Length: 146
Image: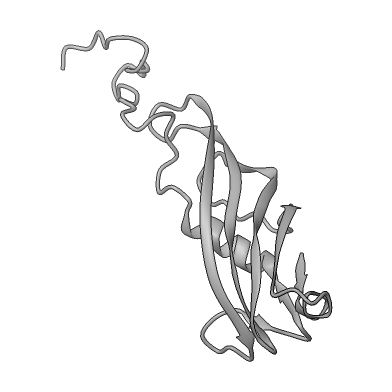
């Protein structure tokens, strides 16, 4: 998934909107029993800022499906991650322009990783399961004496 800055310059425009559906080649998610539903949807705008540089901004919509880390219920949650990146040729501190193209895949994968939840929960106030009897405390009261 590449943005072609040369074709944008040839069009006579300074900026252009884009939309992609993307399926990463590697598994990005390391939350146990959770997976990234594909494809990920990316929309945004690229604006030329120089002969071999551009500003790219947009948002990434992605969905995670798996087990709640507290109560083990099945859950699907949608997320939106925003990104703003300045790209330039031979950029040692960020994303680079190579042969007048930008690898948007790396930007998207990094934004997803930065925006992953630490714990994958069915809801923010999930009560979890009783450690003694195993009842889901979101659905029932525990009968344990403690």
